[in-house]
Figure 1 (cartoon, rainbow over the protein chains, first blue to last red):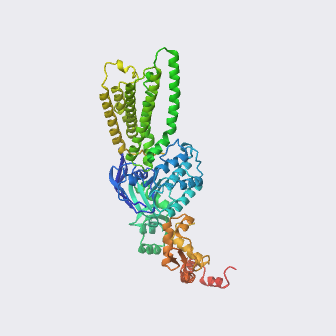
Figure 2 (cartoon, rainbow over the protein chains, first blue to last red):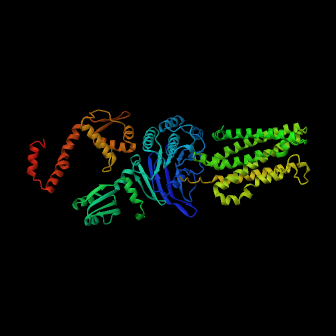
Figure 3 (cartoon, each protein chain N blue to C red):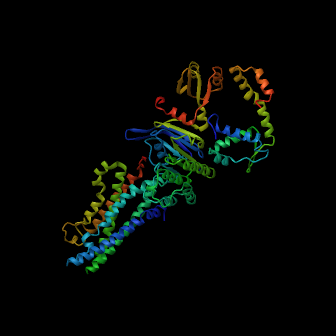
Length: 291
Length: 223
Length: 119
């Protein structure tokens, strides 16, 4: 039912611009993944290769063990909803849903209708007349109701207001519980979705920064706070992502993991170890200076 | 009916309806005007050689790529499956348009008292092939613009439009001529040879159109 | 709801433990399913499941196959014992350290406690 994904040494170029540069990672089936990256990091390009919207320049992508490009049985089981949607912009909402129901195997029209009500999207309105948030909501409706074994939502909730976003999170979790499948959410707004994600893949400049269990990734980020000299001594040899000084006090964000021996050492140095939010960790990992 | 055929019909049914309403009114008006202002037996089909459908169908060919193909692929339909379904759809609408043209020509010739079964069937079949060639050319124009952008695609126009003008040429049916004037032209291919040449044009258009669209990447979306 | 100080599955486990200690959940009560829990707190079901797994390993919850998760009969007692053992380390020791840092004599603290706190 759910599809696994294998990306090996994937490169994509647009003319002389390299969008993806030797990217490799694997996604086990049936989990909710977060694809995190800044604007222009190659997220959308990666997803368009996964969904057979384009072919890679080099390397390969396997979905359910097969190359998805022009593979009808694999393509029909993938649903990528892109920002702005790939819809007839002059069509009415109800026709857009009718079209998806006609073309997509497994599309649940009744569920889509329920979601249209939940998101309060007017059925007679034309796509081009919808607000940005409503268009995003319509995209989410189509993505969820597709029930595709690999469902990918690229910046799905851009422009949605907070109530709509929470509606989306609730709908996603509820439907995922009833119809488990592989779901990829791409975003650069991490705060709200971090808890929905079982695993994250962080890319930057077309390269993999890291991939793994959300909690494990988050746990690797630690802030070390104390007297400057001791912080410096403690962090020597560690990956320091960021540091700030306030008078004699210094605070450094390190990318661990820290073993027990180091944690003991922090205690003897009288250093405070604190957690880092995934959002902050992401910012530090993908900031210019770290590159 | 395949989902592609059904949804394509759903996409375009009103477009066709509007087209034929406008065409119907236009034909009647032209016929009335011609019979009231001249004493010739010129009829509408004779004046226009029933060319409007082919231009409309070539536009449809463009739309099939630029408007429809990306939406279908984004809905999990392989390019090949879409093209197979759309080829059937195009064949059906081309045949329908040619049939309507043939009926119109029959009626027109009947009014003029020039009914000729052999002529009508020859002209009708030429219309069918011309419609297909124009749709094929439209597809080629669409796919080159979508794939290579306006610069290259414009330079390629002599080639991408070639199925259309070559077919027109072999049937001697460029809009300045007509099935009525055809007999007067000295230079004229034998009908069977013209049909073969038109079929070759269509085959070429289909092959090139298929090859160009089979690997076409969907354009990135920009907010 | 949750903060970033510890893993969310840990916080879920702690919440359920608190509920058991405060009697909100009684022995042999059924607890919400991981999916209900995930939906309620808007977290990934796998994260909720991890918290539950932990509680099963610690003997706070037990599973009835095909029905769900239940509070173990001895869970309240087990948790109270555990908290008692950790009480000095978690509550008293930091207090003494604090008192020493600001110069409150231990005798004052003892006297304060014996009087019954601030009441």
